[in-house]
Length: 220
Image (cartoon, rainbow, N blue to C red; front, side, top):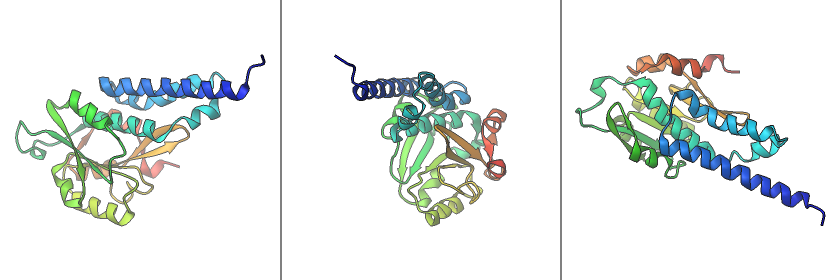
């Protein structure tokens, strides 16, 4: 019996997709090491697939769920590489709050990280936000690309001057006043940043974060 090329391709797709999901899942369960590793996960897997002559196939497998798993791990990593002033917390017992504006594209990925990890010795709380005023009680606010530009601007204005790390995933987000913005580069999730806005927010961005990210003014 001759092998069925279509069947073989389907099997390869399923196996590679399952392997990729397991690898990122392990990252989420274990937390993340150095920040660079959060972004190296998809690249390493895609290179492994591409070496087998399946470059186009590998790119197709970077689906939305994997994208937001990577972003969830990255938000946690940002929390490790940014320092907040003591005044950002009501007390020594206050949790580190990650707010998500614009639905919940992460599924349970952020919740799983919060259940097992801490930041700065504080427990992590994940909150879904519905109005810009709720941002002021958060330390990181992720603004989904589903949020309209006018509302994004309102969120940025509300957070202006406050120790809140604003993270988006929309073109022009850092130019409008955000601090970090995810963007897609080929098959990889990368980020650009606006260090000046970080200073205005009284946040200290680690040198490693500045090295791994791309300044918005220099990204092509």
